[in-house]
Amino acid sequence: MPSDSVHEPFVREAIRLARQARHEGNHPFGALLVRDGEVILTAKNSVGADHDPTAHAETNLVAKAIQELQPDLIRGAVLYTSCEPCAMCVGKMYWAGIRTVVYGLSSRSLSVLAGPDFLIPCRELFERAVEPVAVIGPLLEDEARSVHIGYWHTQRVMEFRFDEALPILRRTPQVLRALLRDLPNPWTDASEGAGTWSPFDVVGHLIHGERTNWVPRVEHMLKYGDSVVFPIFDREAMFNESKGRTLGELLDTFEHERTQSLARLSELALTDADLARHGLHPEFGVVTMRQHLATWVAHDLGHIGQIVRVLARQYTDAVGPWRAYLSILDARRT
Image 1 (tube, rainbow, N blue to C red):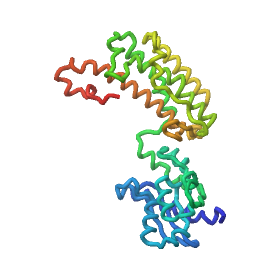
Image 2: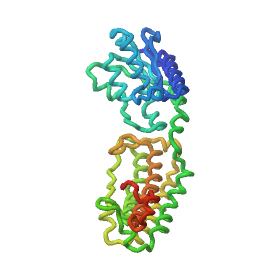
Image 3: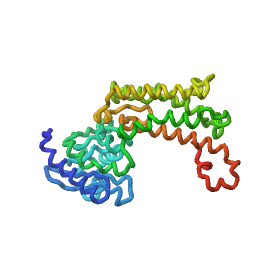
Image 4: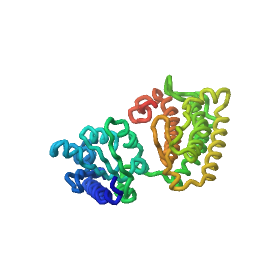
């Protein structure tokens, strides 16, 4: 097997193609086919230009190879790509006859920047094939990563930062207390119908999250990474745990649990490297700690919005014709 130094010039060329794809308004990925040390075909991602989410650099390259090259030439070539290929690209490569793949950025490293969509290491897929496929990588990861810096951020409004997130997490108990404490029961016990939650239920759900989800899963990631799946989170545990309690008691408990959670988070003194750590979600697969903590913030805001919507909808009929101007009364039930 050739040394990494033999492959690096071709990986750099794939990275150059990825950078060019980005400049052209497409996702930053590039690929090329090499036979006997000579580049015979190149391709770039064209998802944006073609309005085709499957137009990855590797699929574009393989499609071109099938049209322009003989099968034995494809089989003897090496496919170089700027990033570890996804499951779709792996299948197309294999059936086209590609038997050696070299990549730059690993899919795990990409997931930290772009999210863990359908994250399956290509080696795992190729290992299931009848014919062996040699996989080499990651190579030149820092160079390959540089093409993506700043790109995926432009697709999102905000990235998780402690100095921006903690003020929300600290305020949630205060907001709920100000909104709900001492309200008459017809408000706090109201829901949007069968299978939906009342404000009382939501506060109980938030308490269970503090005890079993947010910081416990942070500690789980620090201890196990993505080698051990998260324990299942029971979204409806509050129906039993809140029995016999008043809403005032639940609000007090939630404030106490949130204070404890944030104190523990402070003790952990998480770094940027920690935020990039992986965990294994029972439904989503590999996730990052940064995504988990951002979800904590969005989860708070989502349930505050849910409570406000439930309260408002109790006057759906009472407002009469003004309903036409009150979009909150027609919000989709969640």
